[in-house]
Image (cartoon, rainbow, N blue to C red; front, side):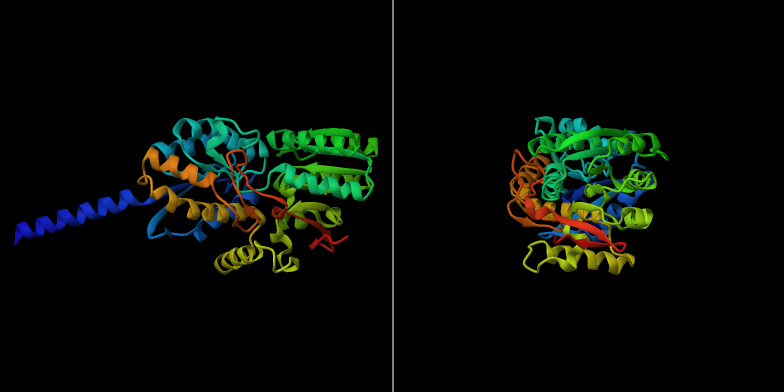
Length: 382
């Protein structure tokens, strides 16, 4: 009898060990605190909405906060890979943070679904970047919509003020190329740091150039200060924002200073106004309802990148399991390959078709033009 119990206990222990080994482990790195927390909190909260099982395979999520610090991002990344043996990582939140771990993703062969806005994480595609995926719109998708609106409104001169980091720099390059193509002259191009509490000098220089319109290229709360300062100094022209400003706190912090702003962003901001035929409307609605049921508020659009990462992984995991077991380099490689072959997958923000050349995967269905009217978001129908 004792021998039978011992054998049973050994078999049970072995089964539990096999089950633990079989779990797919996904690391998550977000900026739940620090300067990027307005973006990172809805991302961190969205982890609870990700599937615990895919095709009968348990999925475990290990979530860490990098406090908006790229150095902490690298430490978190190394812990997740070396100690927790994760199969993929969702995150980090910021573009500088994502750039900081790119090398380690390539060295360890770990697929990363970064939540950052800057396209430099995946563009141009290189051998090092082939492990990086970006379930948010690349800058050119957003910029093309904004520049076309400028053309339609006969904007001839443009001022640009952006963050002094990879997000702002990439936007400067993209908008510079597109405005040249449409004979729009950039008459001022200023930079500021995200934690800055004053951009008076930069705003006065832009104001002195008197452009027809101004583009603010900044993510999260940092998008508000330049626009508010420009308005305080009497600038009356049109102000454009990137998808980095696509959050309700932009409206709350900006107040009347952000009225009539134009931005291109996820349909989530105006989901009720979007046609029922849009392939992402049902997915976005489902995510927003689930988030509100759990947290009592509607999520900022930034959280959608986490939810969509879950959808992408749910699509890729069954394919990867055909080639290898979780917890192995072979599985991570198979997961990367499966992600790279995603075709016409509807997410909350658009439809993903990922290729070896395009690790973001959006087309024009990945953004809509939006304006601010009476303190709220409105689909731009002009």
